[in-house]
Length: 398
Image (tube, rainbow, N blue to C red):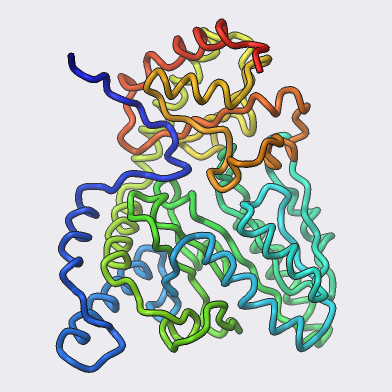
């Protein structure tokens, strides 16, 4: 008997390799030289690494010397935070940073850890859609603020933050600081890991100083990411022991992963608006199906539309435990999740869903469905019926 085709609706956690990325990765597996040496094999590796760096830079409108390869988006966020803040704290003592209450743990936890070094942190609240107030951001910035981190797309509820407006607030604060002869820098960091398949990424247009990317979110391989660091940004290493990556990340570069990532990011940038339009139509139809099949289902986060990324649905079915729902969906051949994959061992409701002001009993039912670029309407037609059947079986069962 033929095995039923599975439906993968957890693209926010990880994506499969595209055919072009797989081909590039296989090609580069034979490039084994250490790019830091001087012989022919090393020169070949260095050439491929330089090409990968240029490819990533081109995809986001940056210079190649502004791209630092990392092992993940998590490492990129840690490098952006520790690399910029630790030396400033040692030099100036008490300083201030601002972020949002719904950032990924790889932003929130490094910032909170620096409180023992003198950092004091403001975590901006969000509204019921997950949006921050730029007025609230402006009010939070003070004379000791040196770092602001605002994600572009939330991984759980798909909120697209108004990053260009955030950048305007930062620019205005810098002008005021210059007029006051305040020597402290004010850096804007953005975790854009969830964005490249669905939104155009141009660092000058976004107005950021640091920007984090993660290959596994864009049909690239796991184990590689990148941090964009605008020229003249003062940043130090977190991983020490070598001069690789402009002295910011010791260790032999992984040339095959870097090259495959560059192809994935270039492909993500190509036709991004049309891809987002097509997948949003599939997503919207899926939500319409769910509303008909499960009339009391609740959409967590923004309304489907301009403030929600094209491939995201986060829903609650009252009385249906989220983990029970995900396990039951998996048994029916549908992969979904309850939250960011980095926090799945936590039995408490998601900090993101809590920050929206969702009642605890509803927060515990939140399930994330995130579509791949290849997900079609035909793929999703049976999902709502499956959810309705699961709800009938398992509501109020823990």
